[in-house]
Image 1: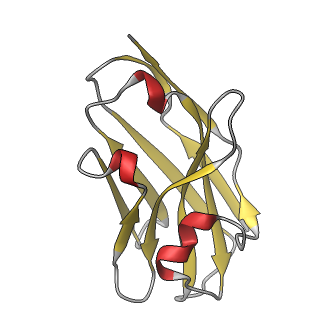
Image 2: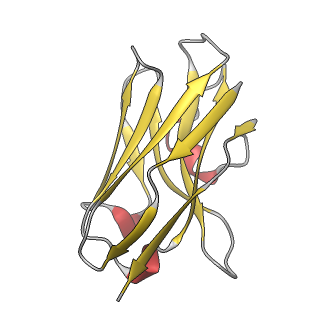
Amino acid sequence: VQLQASGGGLVQTGGSLRLSCAVSGFTSDYYAIGWFRQAPGKLREGVSCISSSDGNTYYTDSVKGRFTISRDNSKNILYLQMNSLRPEDTAVYYCATDPGRDYGARCLEGSGMDYWGKGTLVTVSS
């Protein structure tokens, strides 16, 4: 299983970015998948997950109303639309998945994810 995140960059406060994560190597219809981030000097945190079984979406409180997770199953791509970006959103963003298991909201914990992509850096300037 391989995941490749892209779309990061430098943006001003209030700006937008869309991250993409190309997923390859598995065909399971049942899986946990989501976005995580790690800011300098901080622990990794779950940002958003989407359920494979019912399409429910989950967000950490700090991004609710600003970020939107979505997926294109035909292209095996996971997206994260990030609007109204803030300096505290600055971090390396990772996509991760666990084929064969769907954790629902617990996906945000990240502990069960077996596969992680290389991150993409998002920098929000003030």
